[in-house]
Image 1 (cartoon, helix red, strand yellow):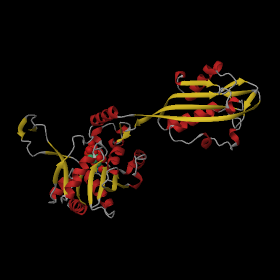
Image 2 (cartoon, helix red, strand yellow; image 1 turned 90 degrees about the horizontal axis):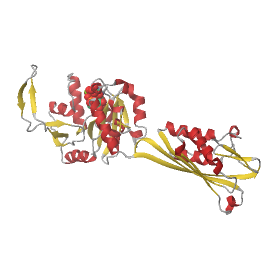
Image 3 (tube, protein in one colour; image 1 turned 120 degrees about the vertical axis):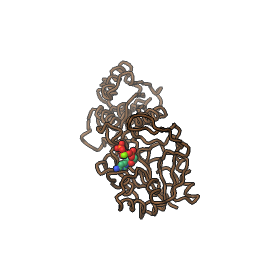
Amino acid sequence: MTIGVVIVAAGRGERAGSPEEGPKQYRRIGGRPVIARTLERFLSWPRSGPVVVVIHPDDAALYAAAVADVDGAADVITTFGGETRQRSVYEGLTALSGTGATHVMIHDAARPFVDHDMLDRVAAALDAGHDGVLPAMPVTDTLKRGGSDGLVHETVPRAGLYAAQTPQTFLLSSIRTAHEKAAALRREDFTDDASIAEWAGLPVALVEGSVDNVKLTVKRDIAMADEKLSQMSFPDVRTGNGYDVHQLEPGDGVTLCGVFIPHDFKLSGHSDADVAIHALTDALLATCGAGDIGDHFPPSDMQWRGAASKIFLAHAAKIVRERGGIITNADISLIAEAPKVAPHRDAMRQNLAEILGITVDRCSVKATTNEKMGFVGRGEGIAAIATATVIYRGSVA
Ligand code: CTP
Ligand code: MG
């Protein structure tokens, strides 16, 4: 048995309103697109076979961006859907045929809270020999039938009534035949696959759904999902460190954190050799895996000769921001026998704040001697260690 998956995501989400925010399956809840969450639940389920996502022809770029960081998304087959959910499912079943899948789970992209326990229950029903399985929840509200006169006409007994969820799961060949038959007879009014199966005479077994497996339909559903996830989420706080060292040679002064301090020596190296800013640039790049300063400003490149190092730091800050990062702290320790750093600390912190676009209280510069030990102690060079703290949008969990 190979359980393929078809996720339908070609709808326009009209009931969710706010078309300027895009189709509901691409909106973010808890910092991540709905469809990324839905897709992940299936890709990480150990029994998943090939996965097809059915998208709207207008949404190719939206889809690619939404699932870019989803593990395994590169192996997902995408195909275009149609005017109705029924048509979109049919296109998905067609794309899944020939992949080796024997069974298919058909799932709404708009149900991102589907969980592995429920998928296991559905699969267990297949293992038990059922060729059609519907996860559903017993109806709990008392049901009334109303009339066009706005009055209650009767109370409908709720015993035996269930609310259908997805993934509705079938033997692939049977549900495909049922869909083909419906299409041939121009029956285009089915809102789920269990009703097509029923119409085609395929038996469907009920298994317990999940209260959390709601479909995001109206705007409030999306807002509530977002609130729920934001409460549960862990902020994506990352720290990076950086280290740099430059040699001292006879000269007229050193530049540290952008401040020129007159001295009998200067620092050698490419650019202005601002060892403190170089260390902090590496620390920032490290918070988003963006390599190091040498990758972005190769020492062999003549254009950086004598350059002010603040260009490097500003560039790293830009990369961090483009990746959704908010810089919350920058901390530098200088290790130098001379010159004295203390009188310049405030000017240095002010420089860092300006380059990074953050407040001065988030910038720290400290200095220590090396107690005359080692190369720093002998006055051969100056070293710097830096730590950057960045909060990235979204959540770790
Ligand atoms: N769907 C689809 N193709 C369609 C219509 C719906 O693939 N032509 C998908 C939706 O993207 C959704 C699922 O079917 O994941 C369930 O449908 P629904 O909640 O009705 O979504 P929409 O049709 O997008 O919303 P609305 O009915 O409010 O317009
Ligand atoms: Mg719809």
